[in-house]
Image (cartoon, rainbow, N blue to C red; front, side, top):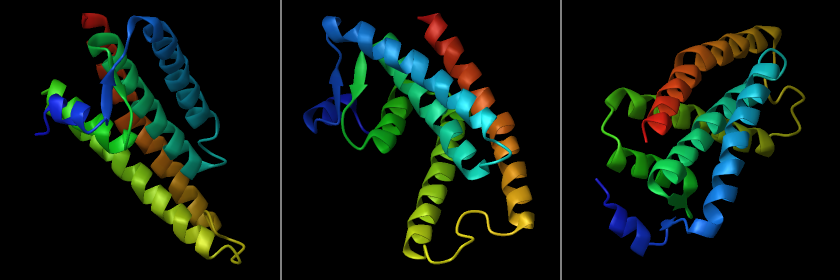
Length: 162
């Protein structure tokens, strides 16, 4: 486990000052909701982007929790650092498994996108065939139902407990 003091010394996290707290919390309260709405809205037409937006809803609500409950701001290597801080502060294994699964999906898609960029000449560089489009629609629906939604609900409970 990485200690918070180490992450502060590495400048990966910092404490949010009183003047910045409202703005920071307000941003993430809106951002996670927008990402969730976007994920749902594009689920059938742009399934890969739906998964990415779903992950960002998870990521942003996590940063909201860290800000509201602990006054922690993530500064550097934001995705990995957010998970490290969450691991340190919260001992709920199910919650950690969900955010790690969401991050894994995000990384997989980011890698896919990087590969697609290299092969931009191919006309089917996102979903390709109708079969693959349907597969990603199923994957996006399952991801929203089984990973994103339960994670958001668990984090909302933790935010309210403060």
